[in-house]
Image (cartoon, rainbow, N blue to C red; front, side):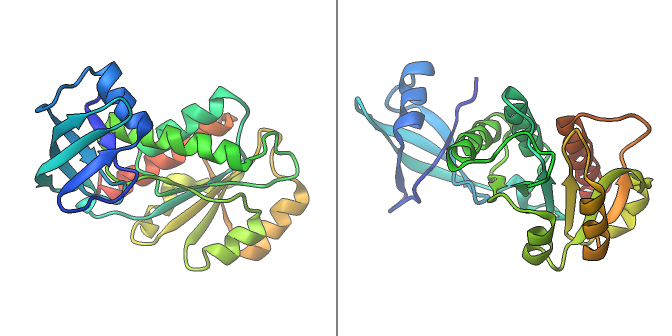
Length: 237
């Protein structure tokens, strides 16, 4: 059970107050006491050891003891995964695993055959999944959940990133390891696949087709395969 907590608001004067959800977890789930030392992180890369100074019915206050170095200070190639979201609990699993594998951004991809709409409330729910995954895996930077976008919009938002598109007819993904010093955007379509029109548009926008293997993968499996690949070339393994 994690004793790491996310700071929704920046610290002031070496002190901070956990928000209602984090305070509830600290007080009622972990049953922490005044004087206990916990770890808190700001989602931007910084983590601290902090001592609990007060516990009320609605809030837990802490004072920082020591700033810890961030695990994200390693060589890191930014990865954005644009994915046509699956339905239901599969979304949660996808977001959790992308967070664990170090993906920087996730963009809900708008496609003709998409089955799930990334509403504002859905994105808020997924952002909570990111926080919980960071708390569990030790990551100190939150994966950003961006607004839904089409292939055309993605090209405008990320003009300088290497653009890849998962497709069975593409070259093997590992053949693109030469791009390990360039930020990368990977588009993953719905289980019905991209339409011919979308594939033609992707070609015109400069997306390179990449294959993830001989088998047809579910959306979340494809996303994890991409994130795992990027994590390996990021860390030189």
